[in-house]
Amino acid sequence: MSQEIKQAWGDTYLYSLKNAQGTQVDISPLGATIVNFFVNDKQGQQQNIVLGFNQPQGYLDTKAYIGSVVGPWANRIAEGKFPLNGETISLELNEGTNHLHGASIHLDKQYWQVASVTQSAICLTIQTQEGDAGYPANIIFTVTYTLNEDNELSIEYAATTDKAVPINVTQHTYFNLSGCHEKIVDHTVSIDADHYLKIDDKAIPMSKDTVANTAMDLRTTKVIKAGISADEQQIKLVNGYDHCWCLNEDKFALAAQVGCESTGIQLQVFTDQNGIQLYTGNALPGEIGREGKVYDAYYGLCLETQHYPDQVNMPEIAEQCIYSPTRPYTHKTVFKVAVN
Image (cartoon, rainbow, N blue to C red; front, side, top):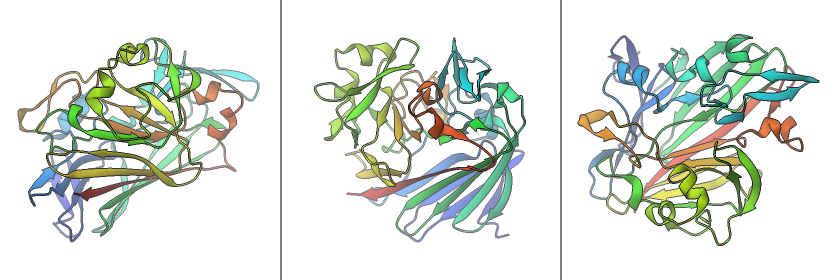
């Protein structure tokens, strides 16, 4: 294997996907993590547009799921409980009364197996066992990252299981299109959604509400600081955005766009999922990242394509997020970078 693709990184490796545009995405088997995402800005200067750490230990220590794949159930399940085949399943609780991002399974801190790798793609896989954190099945997860010449990073998730189980996997990279030189409050954002999920004080969805006449209306481009400073209860509950938008399209389509004026870098998110969680890093814990940067509130934002949070407890659509030996899980998301 070319030394350019694989390089030693602590006790593991980084695998570099590159294209002719000068874009480079470094993936680690630790957490199937996006460690670096280098792109050229409007001045032709290379910028790293994701938060991260110089060494693997930073990813083992972080409590913020920085850069990693999370699951088997990304986001929250209320009280960790849901009905399945006439039984009540109880999962481990790790955020007060919530089950969050798979709890102690920690896909973000496990070493995935590298199934295949080329100069433009890497496929990683991992298995969880029945009973882990309370999940009622054995699950094999696969994630494939592919970088093309159109500056599109495609992420394809797949999972197979031996019994019925809810699955909801996503990427928890924190983007900062300034090259991580400033907070994301001056970034712009838009999301193609007429509705969002209104949350309670435990961040569990209560209802599907219109975005109209609220800070949740991102159908036209908005500066993030204008939204997160709104005098609205939903914003104040979580000190910013940490909500799921109900995407208008029920097929693979453009879901969200983010931009940074200082670098000219824009990010488009395409997905086949029904929801996207915008998290503006409200509770980033002040960990020390690359170049000694302090990753505190609003230093990065996540665009987590997924099923709705707690969808397992929404009777009319719960079955859509239950997978089985005859119904494998698939999910495709594309992060496309452009420069203006």
